[in-house]
Length: 174
Ligand code: ADP
Image 1 (cartoon, rainbow, N blue to C red):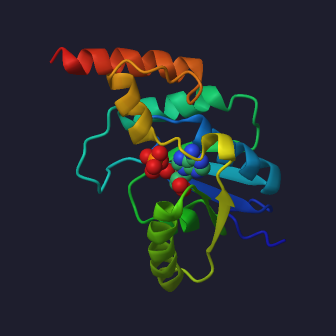
Image 2: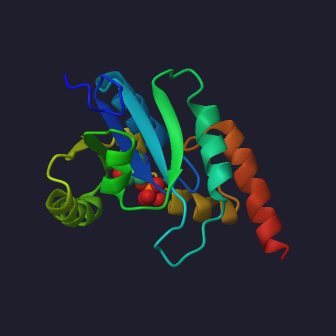
């Protein structure tokens, strides 16, 4: 194993995403990743290239993830606003770990994979299939469900469900 990872002599993987907010689907991939790699850095997109403004600021998205993974000693959460491959290099990661849900994820990931490979051939992308229980869980889906009063208790940890209800309530009162 090379000791080139910012002085860290283990295999580091990053899990990039917007996590607005974190769901059991994300957490499933993070936990499975933590069992396979020596260290997992959950990389939270700060300035999103997507047009929609996130419901939660980056610092709160990070806090919600941190509270969900308190028991995992080899997982760290950091925000980033540079290219994913540059962030991987910055933290000494040799792997980009992503979860794959349906065909729609595949098409997007296939394209991103080619681009990232071209920019950083030394960083390998690794994909884990979503667990069947969470294969239809997305942050955008749960926000929509919660907005219309749906029960998201099966899809996000309790502390996320509470903040989600509060954030949507204050959003609708503005
Ligand atoms: P979302 O699409 O829910 O907004 P993100 O942009 O935060 O998610 O995605 C971050 C990563 O987590 C992506 O690799 C995405 O495929 C993965 N992911 C998101 N939800 C799930 C899930 N339910 N099961 C497995 N992987 C997931």
